[in-house]
Image 1 (cartoon, rainbow, N blue to C red):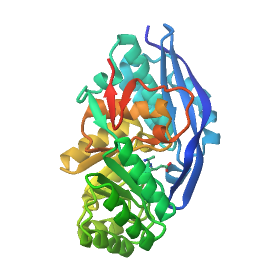
Image 2 (image 1 turned 180 degrees about the horizontal axis):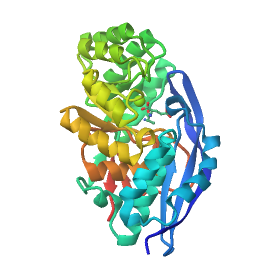
Image 3 (image 1 turned 90 degrees about the horizontal axis):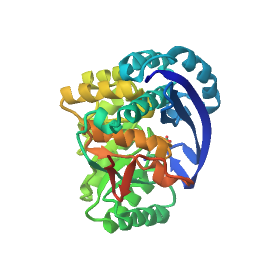
Length: 344
Ligand SMILES: C[C@H](N)C(=O)N[C@H](CCC(=O)O)C(=O)O
Ligand SMILES: [Mg+2]
């Protein structure tokens, strides 16, 4: 029987290879909750929550308290009826990373039970996706060296963090562009600019002939008017990340015509809202990318299967597992830089 017998939580901490510096935040480690669902027939399903206090107000230390509550609420449900379980987990909207990880563990257990990979359960749209890799904020020389290293490693989409110093950001972009011609760029300000600074930034780059594929979250999460202002004064597409957590956020962003791209992260939305957001964004004829927080390979596995299954994303920013020290790779996919490839 595919009925849930137990749900177990385990705290795992991973060190970043080097400090991960984005606007107003420097991380040296990431602490995640591993979820293991055991079915009555002994089958196991795994997921991982990588909570973000910065984005969702989730503190990792508080999350183990949910273990017994979630057990009480979903024990005895059959994973074949996973929509019933998703509806229950939707009530944990204040803990989106836990919602994501438990929802994924349910799909993983079902996948093991019926012998079909999760990406096939979700639609099997693609066999391969391309990821970017990220350059942190830092001294200009370090940012350029990091970008060149990433390019030489074989990545052709480079994510560049900006937002703490407009002048240095412009210089960094100019020098990175000179050394990585042929690459595509996602530039992420993580809410660091005012709307006016954001416009100066993109127009300076445009004048220098630098093309940006997505200008992600230039301004504060709740400044929807500011986002719209940037969108309509920017030569490049503008994306929402911190502004786009739930399907309701995304409906508002579309209504306000505030962005071109939505960055879906399972850690902000869970699987259930992420599925809804995909359809809403497609219906609005806008663009989708998928991103991550500080997931290890166990958590990135979730987004890889989601992206392969759904096949709707123009960009995949799924590099956190490439940025941390991990003893054992836990993904059910293959990595051939810059690609993540399905395994049957
Ligand atoms: C790691 C990924 N490339 C990334 O940049 N994610 C950030 C958020 C990460 C975090 O807050 O821990 C983003 O897209 O803003
Ligand atoms: Mg972002």
